[in-house]
Length: 445
Ligand code: NDP
Ligand code: 2IT
Image (cartoon, rainbow, N blue to C red; front, side, top):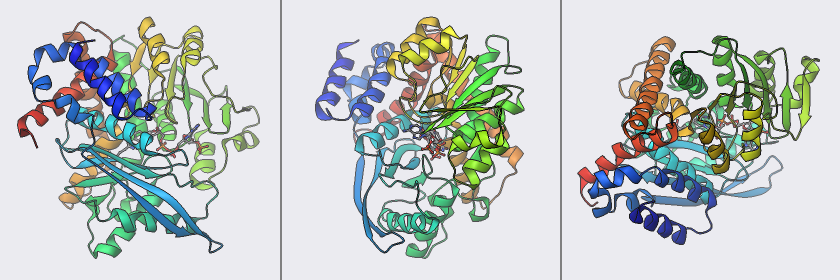
């Protein structure tokens, strides 16, 4: 690695030694930049990379709320505005007990380059809380969301920072957050948050966008090998928003999805996942995936097991970070997997990625392949700004165009720098260059 790059990496490691996820995300991007640094001396001269590795602002706040028993609860809230060179901070909110500053920083850092790849005017940000939605009543979730927004409302806005959903935050939570924002500010300003239900000014196809986008990206990768998804056996991890619509689009394209999961284990349904059952369990009943087998007796539930040991041709990790390790990667390859399309953020460990890269299989890195969600969020902002409501088909077509363009950018840069088929390299370089040019153009601010 070039001396400047290793110095920047060391400085970040020294500044944030206790943030392993953030360092993992930074290292992966920096490792891709060698050929760029030589061609763009301004990056070093103007400390552009250093500036991109330090969030512009980090807001941490206390959230106090009452549970159904009237007991006062305390959680921690975060909102990081990582970089606003390309537009207002844009990125989701995650509610999960594991959330800490490290989690939000890694997600916010990734978001800068993902958003850059979409070619839309959105900067990078992320937020969330260590609140655990599991087992909470709807009233408790509502009170928590209201308490969260009672602090956050000071910092968000259509031109400053626009949150959305992520793990534990879907349409219901966005509705509660938006309602509290409206009440506190006395303004109906839908462009302040995305992922809203359609009745509140949300975009058609936003709910589907991340999962659909993953599959559009997979389709584009397969086209480079003159094949498609039809008849392919697929694994999808998770059973939340991204997983469900990834499965839906895979099935629409003729693939057979035989497994999915949640944090308690996985289900294997060799005849093909019945998505209506998964949606009923997860979207309506908020149940555990283990209950799937009571409705599909030929399926098996594998407690505490991931999906990765099941034979497949394509695998899509759609649950959480570092959920697919080196051993899983080797098992997948041994069983005949030829394509990985990441739906979750940073789901493959660095060792797993090395295994995939050595074998040169088709690999869709998260910041490229899951960018469809944030891209349609930006289209939602666009509709809100123009007081329009586009049809599902219009949004879906824009989404397909954006995913194909992102894939084209990955191909362009990987070919230009003789790293053919290396979409990780291509995505990092394409995402980095657009934002670096903007940082340069502003001067030192
Ligand atoms: P959801 O909350 O809808 O679903 C998350 C799923 O992942 C659930 O099945 C959940 O299981 C599982 N999961 C979460 N944490 C863990 C864990 N620590 N171990 C095992 N399983 C876990 O979230 P989304 O579908 O929205 O998000 C999934 C991934 O996609 C995340 O990485 C997110 O950052 C990323 N993403 C989301 C986008 C969006 O638009 N929503 C856009 C781009 C990326 P359980 O219910 O048991 O916890
Ligand atoms: O990781 C992500 O890109 C998201 N959670 C979606 C962000 C958004 O603003 O829609």
